[in-house]
Length: 61
Image (cartoon, one colour):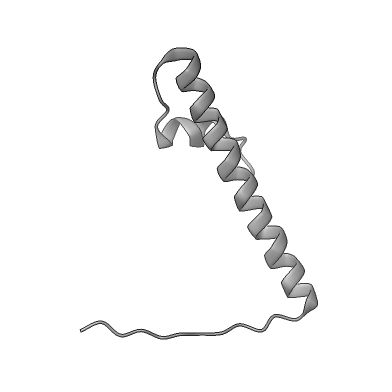
């Protein structure tokens, strides 16, 4: 049997701004990788693996 817990969040304005920024960053990264995969496929006829897309990103320590 599966159990489900529903949670509703009510962030304050600074938290809401940070959430919106994080979601925007994730959306940008997804679109960047998708464009990279599509451009590589159009140029070479071969796709990129997940490892290839991850290695194309700059490292942040």
